Structure formats: C-alpha cells, structure tokens
Image 1 (tube, rainbow, N blue to C red):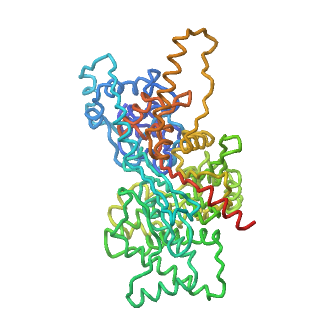
Image 2: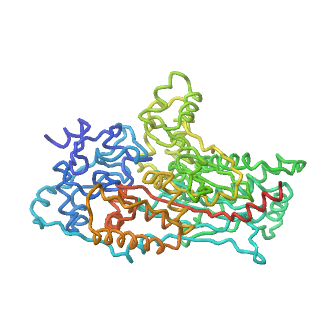
Image 3: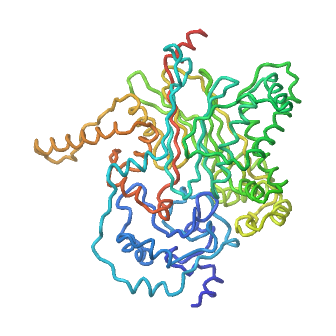
Length: 597
C-alpha cells in the first residue's frame, strides 16, 4: 500500500514509532501528557515500565523490538537520525504502552502532522549486523551523584544573636529533567517589605516559555498584593522621580534559574500598572491585608497580563514572538507563603503541597495541603460543568481531559482554551512567521463553543503550623506519579532526623543459614550507609523516586539505567521532577503558640 493511501486512512506509515501503525491523536497510543502527542522531536514508542525492571522488555511487538539491538549497542543515535523524523517537534506517534496518566495533551486527529520514515531506512537497518549478546553499560556511583546533584540548591535562614526568629530553618530544592529542555521551573524568595517567604514549583507544557515567565513574575505580583498602601505609594513616587526603588524580594536561586533580561522592561511596566491600580482601589483606610485574597488576585492578574501582552504584541519582533510563546504554552503552579505560623498554599493545576507531621511515637504522617485540578477531582468536574451550558456537559470533559485535550483544569497561559476563535485567528494572522509554522496554534479545540474553558485562579489552603509540623514538600506531578505521599513524607522525615525504622528481613518461609542471614544484614547496612551521601533532602527524594525497587530501597542498577536513558527515551518513562523541601523550626513555632496562648 502506498504512503499516501496510508495517510488518507489516518495511519502512520512509520511503524517504528507506533506499533499499531495508528496515527489518531485521540487514540490512547498517541496521547501526550500535556500539550502535544509527544514532548519533543523524534520520539520512539518504548513501553512504559516505570515500576519494574528490566527497562527494555522482550515482550514487545516486532517493530519496536527492531530498535533494541541498536539501543544495547549504543547505535541508537546513529540509526535514529536516519530512521524517522517528524514535520513538527510536538507531534509524533508514541507507543500504545505509554500510560495515559503520564501524558498531558491529546490533540484532535484533524490537526495531526504525520510521522514518516526516511527513504530506505528498512534496508539500512537490516543491512547492518549487531552483536546478539546484550551489553550492559551502567553509570558508576560518582556519575549518578553528579547527575542527581547538578541542579540542587540549599538555603539556610540566617540566625540573629544565636536565635532564629523565622519559623523556617531553610529549604532544599532540586530538579531532574526528562524533557529537553526541562519544562519545570522553581522559585524561592524572601519578602523584604513584608514578613514571610515565598516558595513555588511550576510545571510547563507545550514548552517551557510559560513556566519560565510565571516563575519570574508571579512572586512580584504576590509581593505587591501584600504591600500596604503607604509602601505602594512610596514605590510609585520613587519611579516617578527616578529614585532607586525599594527592594521587594530577595531571590534564592540556583545559577541555572535564570531571568529573561530581554523582557524585563515589559514585565516591569505590566507590574507597575498593577500596583497603580491597587493604589487607586485602596484609599489607605484599611491596614489589614487578606493573604488569601492577595494570592488569588496575583494569580489572576498575572494570567490576565500574559494574555493582554500577547494580544497587544510588541514592535520588537523577538519580544513579540516571546509573549506569544508564553501565552500559547501553559503552566501549572503550586506556591507556599509562610509567615510565622501562618502557612498559605495557592495551587493551580496538579502539582502538590504535602506537610510532613511527626507523631508522638516518632512515626510520620502526610497532610495534603492542595487538591489536584483534574478529572480525578469530582469538585473540579462539577465546577466546569456548572460554568458551561448543559448541552456541553458531555463534551467539556472527555476521556478525563478538558475538551478531550488538556489534563489539568487550571493553568496559566493556554490561551487556546481561553480566547474566542476570532481573537485567536486575528492574533495568529498578525503574528510573526514563526507562529504560523507552529501547528499547535492553528487548530481550534473540538466543541469549542463558550470560552473560556480554563482558569488560572488558584485554590488557596490555610494551615496554622504546629510544633509537630516538621517540613513541607512542594513538587511537580513528576514526583507524585512515581511515589505515594506517605512514602515521600517517610523518606524525607527519616532523612532529616537520621532515624530509620527497619522492618524485619523477610525470607519468604525458606530456611537460611547463619552465613546467608549475615550476608543479608551486611547488604542492608551497606544500603543504609548510602543514605547519608546526600546533603540535600530534595536530591535524596529524587534518588528514591527514580531508583526505588519493589522493596522500597534504592537499586543502583535501576537508578543507573534510568539516568542513562537518552533524552529521546527518558520522557517515555517519567516526567520532569522538581522538588522543594522546606524545613520548619519547631522551637520558633512553639514560641509563637506560647505567646498567643
């Protein structure tokens, strides 16, 4: 059958990418986790087996097995460039084995770009001979540590006169990419004009443009929302007179956490417009600031500015393309504001905040401080249906996705789900040529009748800290897809306290000699000693998330395999992981309680 005939049937002629040969973007075999069918170019459909080894199973269809000798013999990069490519970097076939829970976007069939083989690639692969004996290539422990620690960052709150006056001792953060480039972002900053600290994780989709912009800008919007009227006036007067501005935030950033300098003036002007409006709305009579309301207003205002900047455009062609990329991509956000014993968590999307509580007997329990905004949340489903006509009840959420496409029901950007069809067409037609080359911007979601379907408004949770509340974990869904919340809290709690509860060794009813038992205990002790090689709680948690075996311990062989996957394959097994672990000062929290009692 000819290639044109295959395409007209809605099938993919590149069988190496999709073992069924199907190219239907609404089908399970070709969904992507957030925006696109696959997170990047040239994805080969490899089965997801994140909880079991080996990574490459022999029980695969023949088209997929064809590539395994290439992988084993380090020939993947050479053959891969010759075998298959896509017209568009966001749209490509993926394996039917890929878990839909790991995918974010599932575009409509009508907007697919097809995946096709280069000429004579079958002859090329069949004409080469490869060793039949699998060769194992493992990273050494130092190499593993180098990868895991590349993005780690730690901050300790300074003490004054030997007494820490902050309820936060410090925090550890880290990131492990799966996408190339990574689409997650993180931010942490101390509010200088008000009390408190801001910490957040941001999970981007359809690229990193939106998550990058939100990670740079959101904390400024929150800080401005929390400022009293007099301070806002002082800042505005300084700008008018050309004097130096009062610093608002002290950032705590890893060298890899950059700011886009090209857009700094644009971002500042939008922020200034916001605080000018706050000055006009507030006469200065009330001094009490509602933190929950300030967080909600900041989220909504930033998302509105992202949308407005894209509509207005910019004479600078680079900036014009940048603001459009930010608006058409998307990002979820989970932000914590800690002020004394007052902890507020503002969440938009499906990243999570988890509180680690140490019980009187020394055990650990997890308290969830955020709700996922997706199809598993019944309240979110009900909210969406109430916001649209009854005749859209069956189409607003299909296959657990918004309009059958988007997994999170709240997000920044994603104007494809917010703007009217006329506005989308007008902006795209007047936009730069690069935007017209992006297939994603051209299609209209199915059953798109009463926008907006998406909101960036956060759900805010308040918690009053207690002495038994030891730490807070903020993490993107890449962590929660691989680990249960109770395991996350237990691993971090044992790491921070240095106390590990060992379960009796189970031998499955078999008789073992004293020497065999000694060997099992020696192996356990060796694994336990490796726990203390991490100087960062977030790094330690990532080590477990990627390398845990069925016994709940880190398996170096598995960890090595997962970290040595090429970027073309890593995304098939896991998502980007971004973690911030905030450690609380129990003595200061207890002192707050004593003062108020």
